Image (cartoon, one colour):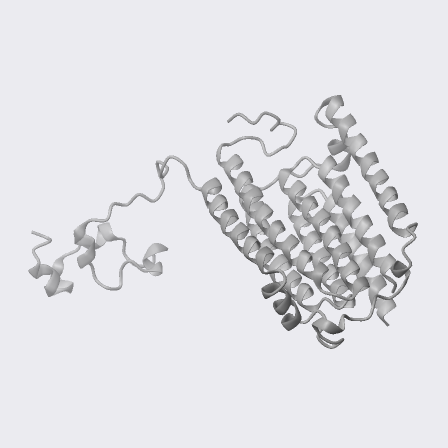
Amino acid sequence: MSAVLFFIAAIAVIAGAAGVVILRNPFYCVLALVTHLVALAVLFLLLRAEFVAAVQVVVYAGAVMVLYVFVVAYVGGESDSIGERLKGGGPVASGLRLVGAILGGAVAIELLIALLGTGLKAIDGYGAGYDPGTGGASTYGTPAYIGQLLLTRFLLSFEIASFLLLIAAVGGVVLARRRGGLGEDEDRRVITPLDLLRPLITGTTAEGVGSLHTPGTARSEPAQESPVEAGTGRHA
Amino acid sequence: MSIAWYLAVSAIVFSLGAVGVMTRRDPLVVLLCLELMLNGANLALIAFARMWGNGDGQILALVVMTVAACEVCIGLGLIVAIYRRRLPIDVDELRELQG
């Protein structure tokens, strides 16, 4: 059963990875990567890494890929065919790209030789027994097990990782912020003190899409609708 | 399945990602292929953690995921900044780092 599941998941993993490399449209590349990540989470589950599999699906395939989808939709990356990709950009660039593909194949062959031709006996086994010091077989890979490790033995790396996330968030905001203020025709409506006296219904989403009155037309209407407004002398 | 099968899958995924990084021109797809390489490394880490029977490799895989998330944040910020400056989104034409 686990062998069948392994082969299904492994084929999905490799197909997703190949899809990312081969597909033309960047949007489809992102979707192929989502397939790859979900299938990889199945492999993690087969390796008894429950918590890492859950994090993979929730954080990676959920949050990070949503970020990718938004940026692809915003930027609208170009889609180039394989032939154009290998030939475009002049002879030097296409030659370099061909060399890159050949080098990638060489890396694959070398890694497979190094991993499968190794003298390690344990690599052919199904994994060691569990370390009795940090919990029995039933707790290996569970959130409690990972949490205990993160907050005891790996506390420093945990803190460094959280600080790295903070730095990356600040850096992302700094990099992607709008420079030079607002544009010419973008939202630069000046808020005056009179806007604070407007009726309660205005300033909502309904007003924003134009189904209600806009502030300019509302102010020009006669003041009978609200005697309080007339008393303020705004229409004098 | 024995650990060697998982390692073979991780090697294939890593080298597919390497091919993608070296051949694609769109920086977005280059970032995606970087994710592929990190995921291949993650799979190897978790396979080795299973081989040894302790959780150190899983912790390291979580840290790698954190680094990948940071890299996505910075990389996508760079791409958005490049797009705002109306520069070509093409790694062949972005050879010079001057604005």
